[in-house]
Length: 563
Image (tube, rainbow, N blue to C red; front, side):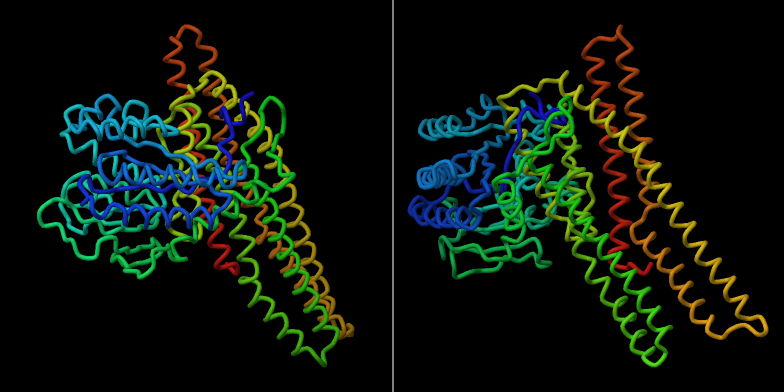
């Protein structure tokens, strides 16, 4: 049975995507040292991230690519022997610059070709221009263009790049030096289209193993020396290290991924299923949705605490004039510290809701063979706290691309699941828009009633002969009025209703578009399929645009709640 969003299977744990870029002609006398150092780093990742599978993207080229692939297979085999069923599903995925048949023509040495064949057999999936549009080049492009595309693919999708590099800038398109430069966020002078890549990726991490080459002029000093670079750093220079092992600042995002994978494997955790026709959602989507709901509840509790505390302190200040200064000081402290206290739950709610929404779009696009990447259209660069979402989206995309290398898509079923998703969203949003509009209206009425009561009481108090003790209650009523408005604005009932109305219009357009295509029986099936994909792709793009606008507004509330 298909899962929700048209997926054939649950991808499961989120992999840490690593990639390799290395020279084809390393000096053979240094290979044992390079292999051993790389082995120790892979073992460190497996030990540090016990619930997280490693997914290696590897071009399987002659030289260091093949050496690294073999080390990876050995380390993974040892982990499976040691932990058995508890070991996560590590994967070696070939990312070839050409179709396998064409790529074989690049291998002149029979031994290197035989090595390639062995590695291809041991890959969990092989992505190439024949099954992935990301690797396609124009028919009239020169030979180096396909290798440039391959480097772009590696940099876009991996978090951690291992570069086996001698440090010499060759200025060759598709070379190791170019791939290493792109990972650091530098634009290669002979590959202009790389600026698009740099605009659409989150900085990851880079580990460079100094790899002397057979080529004349390649430096042979300090073979195997290791240098690191972390995307969180503003510097573009690599940091030398006396230790083989990866430093902690390179593992911040992997550690977050590990915590999510640990939650996915907890006993009793089940994926969400709202109805049988829609099917079960993936475990990752279910976890993100659950965490978003829990974080929203915590944020709402903080809002209630703030509003109630503020109102009670104003009330006490008016009823106890002797200690009025103390009450006002406490009220001021509440407003000073609340922004810091509410940032955690609010940011977590924003992040997890974004992850769930982006996964929905990504899953549907993969199921329908839409080339777009949700990570490219989710603009998190304005806030570094959300960068990890794009890393996860790209990891999931690679998982699914690799899976569909051997498993064909069931197009009609994927469209059926997309229609169910759209219909359910129309029903849900229609109901929630009315609900939030009613709630917002009730809070406005309550606020106006309190303000009106304060005005009436103030008027009565100003009349000759009125009781002076009415004055404090005017302040209390005005405080109630301010508290009601503050709570309504902090929760954002009216704003949420507006956002849901925007989403509702999007889904209604998609609903009408798919319904129209169903009625056009005279069209060729291929034409109908293409148009259905266009409708769902457009709907996904609109959804991500709306999500970006929502994130910008929510982040303003997080960092400036007084606004």
